[in-house]
Image 1: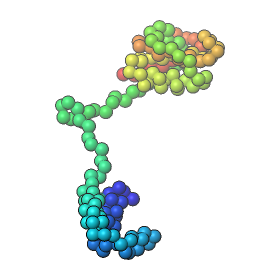
Image 2 (image 1 turned 120 degrees about the vertical axis):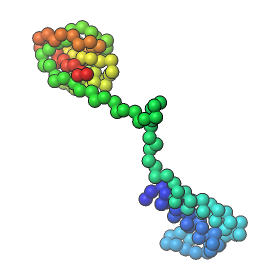
Image 3 (image 1 turned 90 degrees about the horizontal axis):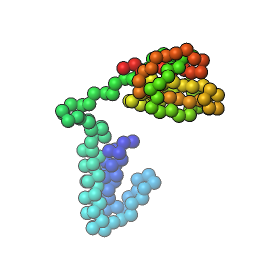
Image 4 (image 1 turned 30 degrees about the vertical axis):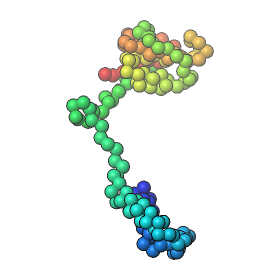
Length: 156
């Protein structure tokens, strides 16, 4: 049931109280007799809620527009290269951090979501530290053969 429908029904019940003065029962709702001031208040509030139910906007999100008055273009789709197993890309590191063992995708996704990142290298556990490491790079260094690592690049 939508908010508009609930508002309309509530307003209709209040309007019924205003018109009939109470003293009625609808299913499990029992309305006692009300004074004239109560009836007037119920009528005003009831009309208000009926109006909300009829004229409430559908809840569509307002459209965002840029400074030129047009909707902004969607963000570019970021694509990644195939994973380069047993390849190391030395240099260009701007960020290095520990990563869960056997979760190469965490390193790849960190690069994918970082606008500054151009390439990444996952270093297997036990090579530099007991845990695996991830290095994000702001350039695309040349790949060299090394069983220590898995690397990849961002395709722009």
